[in-house]
Length: 297
Image (tube, rainbow, N blue to C red; front, side):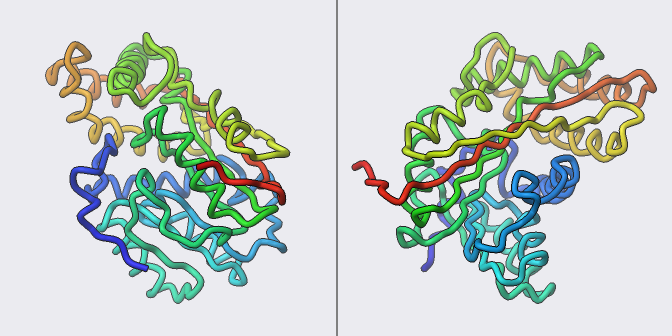
């Protein structure tokens, strides 16, 4: 099946720029850091996937997670979809060079349709979709995923809550401003820059869609000074802050370009301090499609 790369223009709602080469490199680093911080590709299953034969990764970016799963589990056929043509082109090229014949990628807008047959996958995965999702879009996506899952299949979603707990003023201020901007843009749930609120909503979305046996597992992404992944996470967050600049400065009454640039510069200095503390919170929610599932219209 094919999809049009025209989906990459007006339909693209990603706040960091899905066709940006710097963002592609950042996501590749983030995939590795997230896998390590979570303790594996499927830590809730202790990475045991004997009965899983087909997986879909929604909004796969450049395919880092898919590539790792395909390499670790050659018996699994895994597909990744993303709205970005440049991300999908890279993901397919990497799969070819790495001889990962079980990894496949397509350009596809998950906000419109997952263009696969119903009951096609044993497991559907997503991570960090908040950058392009709005509250009304979440139930629709979960319902799409339900249709594409086989009875007994697993829907698995992981999200995080911004830059988390921080002990320095500039980084703390940037976190507050990003949360406020996301709320003003209609992407999050809780006003006044307190959190995105998405991790509190995932279980409800799965339950309302008919998913059963729902479970959760939390993670701390520690980028404090002295933490094993401090430098890598700080570099990742620094790039993210730079890529957020157009989104942040275009949001009226949030922050000016000059103030934002000054805050990012100061935050980079703060993260180098031996006293810096930063830990972001993430949550994975997963559950099962029942055998008696009846799709809603």
